[in-house]
Image (cartoon, rainbow, N blue to C red; front, side):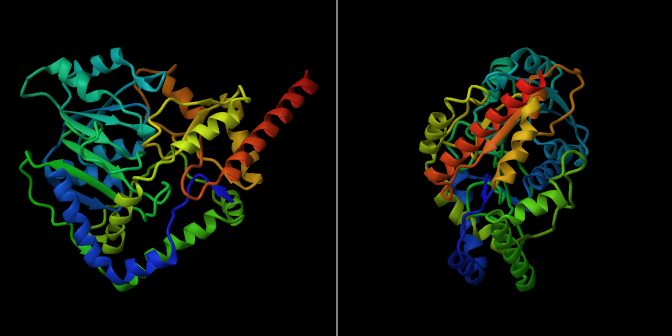
Length: 379
Protein backbone atom coordinates (compact mmCIF):
# COMPACT_ATOMS: atom_id res chain seq x y z
CA UNK A 1 0.00 0.00 0.00
CA UNK A 2 1.40 3.36 -1.06
CA UNK A 3 0.01 5.97 1.32
CA UNK A 4 0.27 9.74 1.44
CA UNK A 5 0.44 9.26 5.22
CA UNK A 6 3.17 7.18 6.72
CA UNK A 7 5.50 7.72 9.66
CA UNK A 8 9.09 6.78 8.92
CA UNK A 9 10.52 5.09 11.98
CA UNK A 10 12.25 1.79 12.64
CA UNK A 11 12.37 -0.65 15.51
CA UNK A 12 15.79 0.70 16.50
CA UNK A 13 14.31 4.20 16.79
CA UNK A 14 11.52 2.84 18.98
CA UNK A 15 14.04 1.11 21.25
CA UNK A 16 16.04 4.33 21.68
CA UNK A 17 12.86 6.30 22.38
CA UNK A 18 11.79 3.73 24.95
CA UNK A 19 15.15 3.60 26.70
CA UNK A 20 16.06 7.32 26.69
CA UNK A 21 12.67 8.99 26.31
CA UNK A 22 12.85 11.38 29.28
CA UNK A 23 16.43 12.50 28.69
CA UNK A 24 15.85 13.02 24.97
CA UNK A 25 12.63 14.92 25.68
CA UNK A 26 14.34 17.39 27.98
CA UNK A 27 17.21 17.82 25.51
CA UNK A 28 14.72 18.52 22.73
CA UNK A 29 12.85 21.16 24.74
CA UNK A 30 16.11 22.87 25.70
CA UNK A 31 17.19 22.94 22.06
CA UNK A 32 13.88 24.49 20.99
CA UNK A 33 14.09 27.15 23.69
CA UNK A 34 17.54 28.16 22.42
CA UNK A 35 16.44 28.09 18.77
CA UNK A 36 13.39 30.28 19.27
CA UNK A 37 14.24 32.24 22.43
CA UNK A 38 10.64 31.92 23.55
CA UNK A 39 8.21 30.06 25.77
CA UNK A 40 7.89 26.52 24.36
CA UNK A 41 4.59 24.65 24.57
CA UNK A 42 4.06 20.98 23.78
CA UNK A 43 0.82 19.02 23.86
CA UNK A 44 -0.95 16.16 22.13
CA UNK A 45 -2.13 18.32 19.20
CA UNK A 46 -1.45 21.79 17.82
CA UNK A 47 -5.02 22.82 18.69
CA UNK A 48 -4.25 22.12 22.37
CA UNK A 49 -1.09 24.24 22.15
CA UNK A 50 -3.03 27.21 20.77
CA UNK A 51 -5.67 26.73 23.47
CA UNK A 52 -3.04 26.76 26.24
CA UNK A 53 -1.28 29.84 24.82
CA UNK A 54 -4.53 31.85 24.64
CA UNK A 55 -5.40 30.80 28.18
CA UNK A 56 -1.93 31.76 29.45
CA UNK A 57 -2.35 35.18 27.81
CA UNK A 58 -5.59 35.50 29.84
CA UNK A 59 -7.51 36.16 26.64
CA UNK A 60 -11.29 36.02 26.74
CA UNK A 61 -13.78 37.60 24.35
CA UNK A 62 -10.99 38.55 21.92
CA UNK A 63 -11.43 38.46 18.13
CA UNK A 64 -8.99 36.55 15.92
CA UNK A 65 -8.89 36.95 12.14
CA UNK A 66 -8.30 33.56 10.44
CA UNK A 67 -8.22 32.33 6.82
CA UNK A 68 -11.25 30.41 5.54
CA UNK A 69 -9.08 27.56 4.19
CA UNK A 70 -7.56 25.91 7.22
CA UNK A 71 -8.37 23.09 9.62
CA UNK A 72 -11.54 23.76 11.66
CA UNK A 73 -9.67 22.53 14.75
CA UNK A 74 -7.99 25.96 14.84
CA UNK A 75 -11.27 27.84 15.23
CA UNK A 76 -12.49 25.24 17.69
CA UNK A 77 -9.47 25.85 19.92
CA UNK A 78 -10.08 29.60 19.73
CA UNK A 79 -13.76 29.23 20.62
CA UNK A 80 -13.04 26.78 23.43
CA UNK A 81 -10.64 29.28 24.98
CA UNK A 82 -13.46 31.82 25.21
CA UNK A 83 -12.58 33.84 22.11
CA UNK A 84 -14.13 34.21 18.66
CA UNK A 85 -13.08 34.24 15.01
CA UNK A 86 -13.77 36.24 11.88
CA UNK A 87 -12.50 35.06 8.50
CA UNK A 88 -10.69 36.35 5.47
CA UNK A 89 -10.70 34.60 2.12
CA UNK A 90 -7.93 33.04 0.08
CA UNK A 91 -7.76 33.13 -3.71
CA UNK A 92 -5.75 31.74 -6.61
CA UNK A 93 -2.88 30.98 -6.80
CA UNK A 94 -3.35 30.04 -3.19
CA UNK A 95 -2.83 33.47 -1.73
CA UNK A 96 -4.68 36.10 0.31
CA UNK A 97 -7.71 37.91 -1.01
CA UNK A 98 -6.43 41.34 0.00
CA UNK A 99 -9.83 43.04 -0.14
CA UNK A 100 -11.32 40.50 2.24
CA UNK A 101 -8.21 40.66 4.44
CA UNK A 102 -8.28 44.46 4.72
CA UNK A 103 -11.98 44.32 5.56
CA UNK A 104 -11.07 41.99 8.41
CA UNK A 105 -8.29 44.28 9.61
CA UNK A 106 -10.78 47.16 9.56
CA UNK A 107 -12.67 45.38 12.34
CA UNK A 108 -9.59 45.78 14.59
CA UNK A 109 -9.00 42.14 15.48
CA UNK A 110 -6.90 41.35 18.53
CA UNK A 111 -4.91 38.74 16.60
CA UNK A 112 -4.39 37.64 12.99
CA UNK A 113 -3.56 34.05 12.04
CA UNK A 114 -1.58 33.07 8.94
CA UNK A 115 -2.11 29.46 7.89
CA UNK A 116 0.78 28.44 5.64
CA UNK A 117 -0.98 25.40 4.18
CA UNK A 118 1.37 22.97 2.38
CA UNK A 119 4.20 25.28 3.51
CA UNK A 120 3.10 28.02 1.09
CA UNK A 121 3.99 31.44 2.58
CA UNK A 122 1.06 33.77 3.27
CA UNK A 123 2.17 37.46 3.53
CA UNK A 124 0.02 38.18 6.59
CA UNK A 125 2.80 39.86 8.57
CA UNK A 126 3.64 42.23 5.73
CA UNK A 127 0.01 43.25 5.16
CA UNK A 128 -0.62 43.79 8.88
CA UNK A 129 2.47 45.99 9.21
CA UNK A 130 1.45 47.94 6.12
CA UNK A 131 -2.03 48.51 7.57
CA UNK A 132 -1.08 49.37 11.18
CA UNK A 133 2.44 50.77 10.72
CA UNK A 134 4.18 51.42 14.05
CA UNK A 135 0.92 51.39 15.98
CA UNK A 136 1.66 49.74 19.34
CA UNK A 137 -1.88 48.34 19.37
CA UNK A 138 -1.44 46.26 16.23
CA UNK A 139 -2.78 42.70 16.56
CA UNK A 140 -0.91 39.66 17.81
CA UNK A 141 0.49 37.69 14.85
CA UNK A 142 0.06 33.89 14.84
CA UNK A 143 1.83 31.66 12.31
CA UNK A 144 0.27 28.23 11.72
CA UNK A 145 2.85 25.90 10.18
CA UNK A 146 0.87 22.68 10.64
CA UNK A 147 1.58 21.52 7.10
CA UNK A 148 5.19 22.58 6.74
CA UNK A 149 7.67 19.81 7.38
CA UNK A 150 10.51 21.65 9.09
CA UNK A 151 11.11 23.63 12.26
CA UNK A 152 13.09 26.73 11.32
CA UNK A 153 13.00 29.78 13.63
CA UNK A 154 14.51 32.13 11.03
CA UNK A 155 12.17 31.11 8.24
CA UNK A 156 10.01 34.01 7.06
CA UNK A 157 6.93 32.04 8.11
CA UNK A 158 8.15 32.19 11.73
CA UNK A 159 10.30 35.31 11.95
CA UNK A 160 8.33 38.35 13.08
CA UNK A 161 5.36 36.38 14.41
CA UNK A 162 4.43 36.50 18.09
CA UNK A 163 3.15 32.92 18.16
CA UNK A 164 4.36 30.05 15.98
CA UNK A 165 2.53 26.71 15.82
CA UNK A 166 3.67 23.34 14.49
CA UNK A 167 1.77 20.08 14.13
CA UNK A 168 4.14 17.15 14.06
CA UNK A 169 1.56 14.44 13.48
CA UNK A 170 2.04 10.88 12.25
CA UNK A 171 0.55 11.71 8.85
CA UNK A 172 3.47 13.95 7.89
CA UNK A 173 6.47 12.37 6.10
CA UNK A 174 8.57 12.34 9.25
CA UNK A 175 9.14 9.92 12.15
CA UNK A 176 6.65 11.16 14.64
CA UNK A 177 3.85 10.26 17.04
CA UNK A 178 1.22 12.98 17.46
CA UNK A 179 2.61 16.16 18.98
CA UNK A 180 1.82 19.85 18.81
CA UNK A 181 4.56 22.41 19.39
CA UNK A 182 4.09 26.13 19.96
CA UNK A 183 6.32 29.13 20.58
CA UNK A 184 5.23 32.29 22.37
CA UNK A 185 7.80 35.06 22.15
CA UNK A 186 9.34 36.05 25.48
CA UNK A 187 8.13 39.64 25.11
CA UNK A 188 4.81 38.33 26.43
CA UNK A 189 4.86 37.94 30.23
CA UNK A 190 3.21 34.60 30.93
CA UNK A 191 3.86 31.99 33.53
CA UNK A 192 6.71 29.75 32.47
CA UNK A 193 5.26 26.56 31.02
CA UNK A 194 7.23 23.69 32.51
CA UNK A 195 5.80 21.22 30.00
CA UNK A 196 5.24 18.48 32.52
CA UNK A 197 6.18 15.16 30.93
CA UNK A 198 4.37 11.90 31.45
CA UNK A 199 6.96 9.15 31.79
CA UNK A 200 4.47 6.36 32.54
CA UNK A 201 5.86 3.04 31.31
CA UNK A 202 2.42 1.65 30.51
CA UNK A 203 1.13 4.69 28.60
CA UNK A 204 4.43 5.04 26.74
CA UNK A 205 4.33 1.40 25.70
CA UNK A 206 0.74 1.74 24.48
CA UNK A 207 1.60 4.90 22.52
CA UNK A 208 4.57 3.28 20.77
CA UNK A 209 2.59 0.13 19.95
CA UNK A 210 -0.23 2.23 18.46
CA UNK A 211 2.29 4.32 16.57
CA UNK A 212 4.07 1.36 15.03
CA UNK A 213 0.73 -0.34 14.40
CA UNK A 214 -0.28 2.66 12.30
CA UNK A 215 2.84 2.29 10.21
CA UNK A 216 2.09 -1.39 9.55
CA UNK A 217 -1.53 -0.63 8.61
CA UNK A 218 -0.54 2.23 6.31
CA UNK A 219 1.69 -0.12 4.34
CA UNK A 220 -0.80 -2.96 3.99
CA UNK A 221 -4.14 -3.68 2.25
CA UNK A 222 -5.72 -3.64 5.72
CA UNK A 223 -6.08 0.09 5.16
CA UNK A 224 -8.70 -0.49 2.45
CA UNK A 225 -10.78 -2.64 4.80
CA UNK A 226 -10.54 -0.12 7.66
CA UNK A 227 -11.47 2.69 5.30
CA UNK A 228 -14.65 0.85 4.28
CA UNK A 229 -15.59 0.00 7.87
CA UNK A 230 -14.82 3.42 9.38
CA UNK A 231 -13.96 6.12 6.80
CA UNK A 232 -12.13 9.21 8.09
CA UNK A 233 -14.33 11.73 9.86
CA UNK A 234 -15.32 14.78 7.84
CA UNK A 235 -16.92 17.66 9.68
CA UNK A 236 -18.19 17.70 13.23
CA UNK A 237 -16.03 18.36 16.26
CA UNK A 238 -12.26 17.80 16.16
CA UNK A 239 -11.86 18.67 19.82
CA UNK A 240 -10.52 16.45 22.57
CA UNK A 241 -9.68 17.38 26.15
CA UNK A 242 -6.11 18.71 26.33
CA UNK A 243 -3.97 16.33 28.38
CA UNK A 244 -2.40 17.80 31.48
CA UNK A 245 0.92 16.22 30.53
CA UNK A 246 2.43 14.99 27.26
CA UNK A 247 4.29 11.70 26.92
CA UNK A 248 8.05 12.08 27.12
CA UNK A 249 8.40 9.54 24.28
CA UNK A 250 6.54 11.86 21.93
CA UNK A 251 8.63 14.89 22.85
CA UNK A 252 11.81 12.81 22.54
CA UNK A 253 11.04 12.45 18.82
CA UNK A 254 11.76 16.14 18.32
CA UNK A 255 15.43 15.25 17.86
CA UNK A 256 14.46 13.08 14.87
CA UNK A 257 12.15 15.71 13.43
CA UNK A 258 14.67 18.54 13.55
CA UNK A 259 17.20 16.29 11.84
CA UNK A 260 14.95 14.66 9.24
CA UNK A 261 12.92 17.75 8.43
CA UNK A 262 15.96 18.91 6.48
CA UNK A 263 15.53 16.08 3.95
CA UNK A 264 14.82 17.51 0.52
CA UNK A 265 12.04 15.89 -1.51
CA UNK A 266 11.82 18.51 -4.25
CA UNK A 267 13.07 15.99 -6.80
CA UNK A 268 9.86 14.02 -6.17
CA UNK A 269 7.76 17.10 -6.98
CA UNK A 270 9.68 17.54 -10.25
CA UNK A 271 9.20 13.91 -11.18
CA UNK A 272 5.46 14.09 -10.46
CA UNK A 273 5.38 17.17 -12.72
CA UNK A 274 6.83 15.11 -15.56
CA UNK A 275 4.54 12.14 -14.97
CA UNK A 276 1.37 14.22 -14.81
CA UNK A 277 2.21 16.64 -17.62
CA UNK A 278 0.23 14.47 -20.05
CA UNK A 279 -2.92 14.50 -17.89
CA UNK A 280 -4.54 17.92 -18.46
CA UNK A 281 -7.28 17.23 -15.90
CA UNK A 282 -4.73 17.41 -13.05
CA UNK A 283 -3.39 20.79 -11.89
CA UNK A 284 -0.52 21.00 -9.34
CA UNK A 285 -0.95 23.74 -6.75
CA UNK A 286 1.62 26.52 -6.49
CA UNK A 287 3.36 25.98 -3.14
CA UNK A 288 6.77 26.12 -1.46
CA UNK A 289 8.04 22.67 -2.37
CA UNK A 290 10.93 22.83 0.06
CA UNK A 291 8.54 22.76 3.01
CA UNK A 292 5.49 20.93 1.66
CA UNK A 293 4.42 17.68 3.26
CA UNK A 294 2.44 16.47 0.23
CA UNK A 295 2.27 17.00 -3.52
CA UNK A 296 -1.14 18.74 -3.72
CA UNK A 297 -3.13 18.93 -6.96
CA UNK A 298 -6.65 19.89 -7.93
CA UNK A 299 -9.11 18.08 -10.18
CA UNK A 300 -12.71 18.81 -11.08
CA UNK A 301 -14.85 18.21 -7.97
CA UNK A 302 -16.91 15.55 -9.81
CA UNK A 303 -13.73 13.48 -10.21
CA UNK A 304 -12.08 13.97 -6.82
CA UNK A 305 -13.81 11.31 -4.69
CA UNK A 306 -13.98 8.87 -7.60
CA UNK A 307 -10.21 9.17 -8.13
CA UNK A 308 -9.67 8.65 -4.39
CA UNK A 309 -11.70 5.41 -4.42
CA UNK A 310 -10.19 4.24 -7.75
CA UNK A 311 -6.66 4.63 -6.36
CA UNK A 312 -7.50 3.06 -3.00
CA UNK A 313 -8.71 -0.10 -4.76
CA UNK A 314 -5.29 -0.24 -6.41
CA UNK A 315 -3.40 0.16 -3.13
CA UNK A 316 -2.72 3.91 -3.42
CA UNK A 317 -4.05 6.06 -0.59
CA UNK A 318 -4.36 9.73 -1.56
CA UNK A 319 -5.20 12.52 0.86
CA UNK A 320 -8.00 15.10 0.74
CA UNK A 321 -6.68 17.84 3.05
CA UNK A 322 -8.64 19.94 3.60
CA UNK A 323 -12.01 18.63 2.47
CA UNK A 324 -13.79 20.31 5.39
CA UNK A 325 -13.09 23.96 6.11
CA UNK A 326 -14.30 26.92 8.13
CA UNK A 327 -17.80 28.22 7.38
CA UNK A 328 -17.86 31.80 6.17
CA UNK A 329 -20.38 34.50 6.98
CA UNK A 330 -19.83 36.04 3.54
CA UNK A 331 -21.83 33.27 1.90
CA UNK A 332 -21.03 31.07 -1.08
CA UNK A 333 -18.84 31.30 -4.17
CA UNK A 334 -15.52 31.04 -2.36
CA UNK A 335 -12.30 29.77 -3.92
CA UNK A 336 -11.72 27.86 -0.69
CA UNK A 337 -15.00 25.95 -1.14
CA UNK A 338 -13.95 24.87 -4.62
CA UNK A 339 -10.46 23.98 -3.37
CA UNK A 340 -11.85 21.88 -0.53
CA UNK A 341 -13.90 19.88 -3.06
CA UNK A 342 -11.03 19.55 -5.55
CA UNK A 343 -7.77 18.95 -3.70
CA UNK A 344 -5.87 15.65 -3.63
CA UNK A 345 -2.57 15.01 -1.84
CA UNK A 346 -0.04 12.69 -3.46
CA UNK A 347 2.58 10.93 -1.29
CA UNK A 348 6.11 12.25 -0.94
CA UNK A 349 8.83 11.25 1.49
CA UNK A 350 11.66 8.80 2.00
CA UNK A 351 9.24 5.86 1.68
CA UNK A 352 8.22 6.90 -1.87
CA UNK A 353 10.27 5.49 -4.75
CA UNK A 354 10.45 6.34 -8.45
CA UNK A 355 8.46 3.17 -9.20
CA UNK A 356 5.79 4.26 -6.72
CA UNK A 357 5.38 7.62 -8.43
CA UNK A 358 5.28 5.99 -11.86
CA UNK A 359 2.54 3.67 -10.62
CA UNK A 360 0.53 6.68 -9.41
CA UNK A 361 0.89 8.23 -12.87
CA UNK A 362 -0.27 5.04 -14.64
CA UNK A 363 -3.28 4.60 -12.37
CA UNK A 364 -4.39 8.20 -12.90
CA UNK A 365 -4.02 7.89 -16.67
CA UNK A 366 -6.11 4.73 -16.56
CA UNK A 367 -8.80 6.46 -14.52
CA UNK A 368 -9.24 9.29 -17.02
CA UNK A 369 -9.26 6.89 -19.98
CA UNK A 370 -12.10 4.96 -18.32
CA UNK A 371 -13.90 8.19 -17.37
CA UNK A 372 -13.67 9.50 -20.93
CA UNK A 373 -15.06 6.26 -22.41
CA UNK A 374 -17.88 6.31 -19.87
CA UNK A 375 -18.82 9.87 -20.90
CA UNK A 376 -18.73 8.93 -24.59
CA UNK A 377 -21.04 5.96 -24.05
CA UNK A 378 -23.33 8.08 -21.91
CA UNK A 379 -23.81 10.57 -24.72
